[in-house]
Image 1 (cartoon, one colour):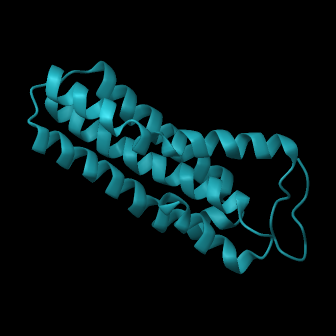
Image 2 (image 1 turned 45 degrees about the vertical axis):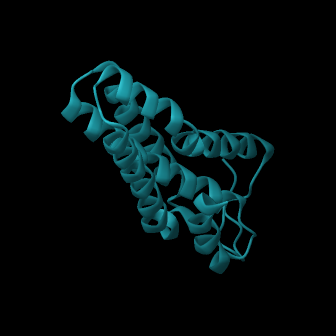
Image 3 (image 1 turned 90 degrees about the vertical axis):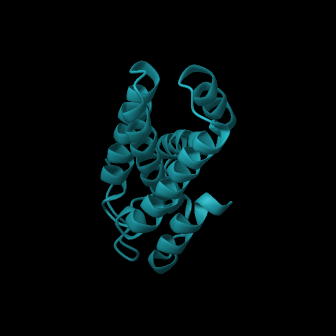
Length: 147
């Protein structure tokens, strides 16, 4: 593992890490990309109304945005890998629970937890792609969900 840059305190973005950042960002944005599919599944298989399904998915996207904002400072520094791993773990656990346990309370909790995890993953990916100046990394990682 390479050393931090002493002038900025950031870990260099090597090609291997760039591929990882790209993968983290794809998984993080999966929440927004799967909204139509999830709404169809919620209304068709669990009996949610369109309004209920839309509200749940809005809550998941809001959880994603809030988690991204709250984790951006940690993701901008040495905690980037911790934020990325925790976010991906939460997203995988939440969305897997929602997919494989067809119970309304489990699905609601899983989708919201998955949104929180996705926000952490997006924050870590945005921070890794930010310019080398440490002071701009929190803004870049927090702004990445709006792109």
